[in-house]
Length: 144
Image (cartoon, rainbow, N blue to C red; front, side, top):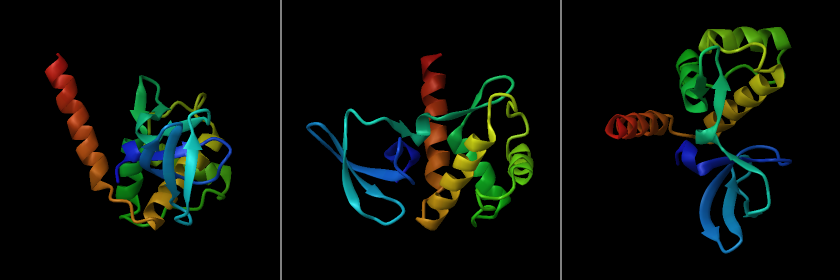
């Protein structure tokens, strides 16, 4: 599983892995309880590999933030997403020092940390993020 196969569905808690496509959407499995569920094309979904976090200069891919959290916590769960706002902001400043504090809200930070902890508990292989970043960089180099 890589971040290109992990989605967040608006209005539903947790994260979901895409298992396959159907005529009107796709089949997913919840990373929380492992239950399979169909997702219609009309539902609002976000692929984690497509999400970026605002910095003062550009956007940092969510995968890079996950890797920084993974390194900081040595492959274990981070603090709870329900921790006090100042603790969450301080943690985010450590893992992504240049994040834009005016455009990245505490609610965004909570979601990132909640997703990271969910990926840890589901046994996600963070090496796949490094592979995806490497492929993206190679594709960009070939395009130039």
